[in-house]
Length: 208
View 1: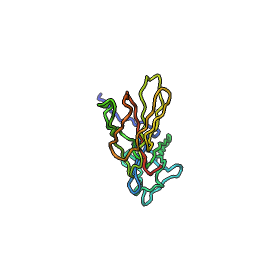
View 2 (view 1 turned 135 degrees about the vertical axis):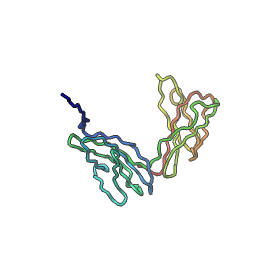
View 3 (view 1 turned 30 degrees about the horizontal axis):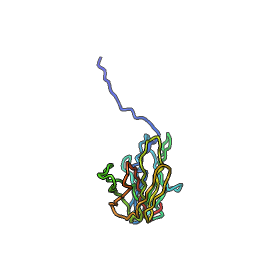
View 4 (view 1 turned 45 degrees about the vertical axis):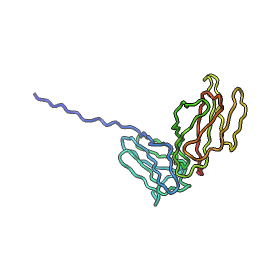
């Protein structure tokens, strides 16, 4: 007696799962912005987009695109009123999931290009890069000496127009001169400078 054996794939049934391509999306007025949610769901989920609590529909400047599991909210000719918080919601018979995204006109995070260790003991050239759709108005530099990790010292913000100096506990904080909006800015700390930790923030005219 001959018998036949066969197999068939088993399809699991799961509530939706969402991954966001970028939770923080940078754009500028007059440009295009794309907010992307990757949705995994079986059975397939219905996906809706929201701005805060307002459900979004297609308009002349706004459309929703679906390619496989990739769901994209496209905003054309971005206006200042478009900046803010968005979410995508996926819903099937087994459950619902929501993920959040933010559309912002603020600059991207500053990336330091300098080597972590300088060549000279009394000067250090800080090089950085930042992306912004609108002109940068100001850079804010933070720096502090590095002590034993068991004795942390809070970072101090410096963006004064004139050099200043003040004592804070066992260390002396120094400000730098006004930071021009250029990609390279010389930074001259005290002559006996040891290891320092730095951070930099860029600001443009956008506040959202």
